[in-house]
Length: 454
Image (cartoon, rainbow, N blue to C red; front, side, top):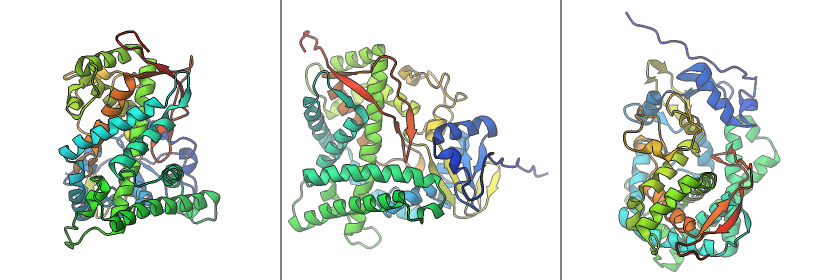
């Protein structure tokens, strides 16, 4: 006898025309987190009139959604529809065979020799940034980390082909685009067609970002100069399908993807690590002891990345507690079996890494920052419970690059300065296109060396 699956519950509070937008727009994180407690492994919400979005909350179902054999029946979904408006058809926004081809094209840029060469560039840019910070100076840590991440990006991707004005404008426009995308995900499509200031701002910023990147690509083509950066490498790539070099538009899409991932996500993780260490002197002291033991007085190098396990656990715990992803989406292209449910074509699926990683059923005391929870054998997690880089064929292609960047920057910063919080100061996560820290003002303090000098 066939057992019918239980009906998929529908979240309360949906309104005509707006769906659940009024609950999501002010702060989507509490709403999304509440769904697991109230509704179980699958729950339906409305992001778009006359469509159904199923929030997937069970680790096994999330993993099935991301990996074979289900993944080939899925497109990337609503979040990536919005990202495609900026990025075009990039490795992040496409699925299926097209994704496989694009991933193969980009893989040489993230090979071990390339990442090893980038580490020296990352360290030099971090040292230059620290040189500009003065003891007693109060700075916005996340904004400072975005600036540092963009500095590293311009060297590893563009080899300084962006002048100061273009660099500054790119930074401002990327911020506008990412804030706008975060809002547009939660609003019905009809709102995006209205002549509203938020739509005008998004369109202007999106077009300006693409124009900046396109200009850098065109300049490189005319100069015929190989600077050894990612942009130059992409000029040598051939499209597997056509046998032809990538078009300027294709290169622009991939470079924009790298620009967003390499600034928005990296800067956010760096800022949260600095914040957590400022709140926990014992964890900070452990990190510093490890850095001193492994590095001594010399600067960090690529070979040290794998020799700093405690710092890696600190980063891993930040990726758990304050993950940047709050809405990862897919869409069924055909009738699809997910667990015990059969979903019709055109069903939107979504999961929230931020909520998943804070689930008390998976992580005891989930709001406690504890790097030692990642010691071998400390906890056993079901597959799909911890997804810092995604899973399956769409796992982040730049995860090794990102970890090298994070460890290099932190190993350089933490041995020279520390950041102090005001008494009682607390920073909370804010969801836009990604989850980021709210205002994070901290004071720079000189780090005393082992010899006792400032």
